[in-house]
Image 1 (cartoon, one colour):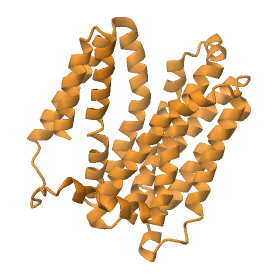
Image 2 (spheres, rainbow, N blue to C red):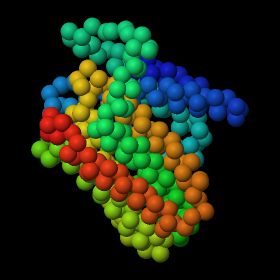
Image 3 (spheres, rainbow, N blue to C red):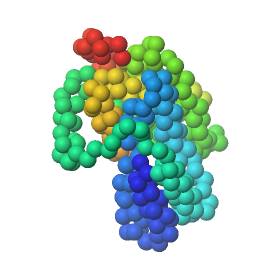
Image 4 (cartoon, rainbow, N blue to C red):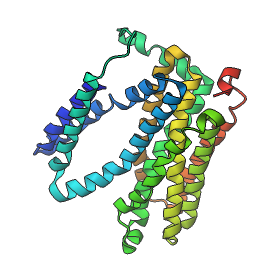
Length: 320
């Protein structure tokens, strides 16, 4: 985590001063590579440390942070970069990354846990075993759709309803800011997951997100206030699903593979997010209602996929 953040700070500072398109593109690629060192590791780290209560709340807080950053980053970038330029937006972030990395290096390592150094092949060999687990596939499959639908949703609204929203004084940044309170959902359900079970919360979250998308499709660009309200329901469903899926993975995976299983979940989640712009572009010629209905169907299928696997788990898994 620390060295990944140091690399991210360095690259962010460099591209903040870049004056050519080729250097900017190369820097952004390196920036993404460095940034990818943090999310899967920190989520796996929090999913394995502390008491069950501490693990639940740790995952809830980090889920809230990641999801909120997806919207706050766009608001920050649009405000700062739009007014003072790209470099002005990158340099403060580079400072934050460097300070965080320094704080991590000053934090004491886990007592009694000597670092292991397996070969690269040995470290990733269990991935096939994880993917062969039918119960874990019922987590990874929905995870791949979750952020894909989230990214596609906002890109589609910008393209099809942006003009109508602007006529009402609602900018793309304000559209995203409206849903920010919904990203507190992981904190709201942190105490509920141990009692209700991660699988039920996954189904509830996916179902809520699908319902929000369906209502957005119904509201369209003619009922803008209904569209905004339904978008909050959709984002709340996403906020419930993300930590619930992490808890589900942590409960299903064998303890020696738990960290790798959670890291693989994070990888699948963000691969889905990367596919969002491609999907939005591919179906950009579709009407708004049709696109949102497709997204609602995808998440409904994901919820049913999780639901139909409730009897396939072993007794120990079923308790999760």
